[in-house]
Length: 89
Image 1: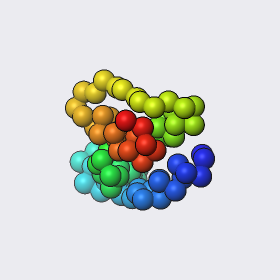
Image 2: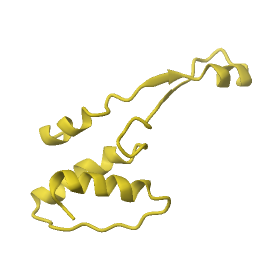
Image 3: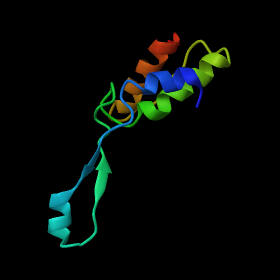
């Protein structure tokens, strides 16, 4: 992972790991179930984990603008966030 990307990741990573005790109870399982909470990222999802390196590599390649299709908006928000960091519109 390139250092500029790692530096940005430090804003929210590592993301917290929680134990899903209620789910364990509902499932009546002896297994310990854990999940990572990605809502601590700037856009509230896991999407910046991919958007940041994509924006970085596009900037390195000389790309000036990036565009995307987005459904619920989290990917678009993440790509806009990452693009703003690297100066890509």
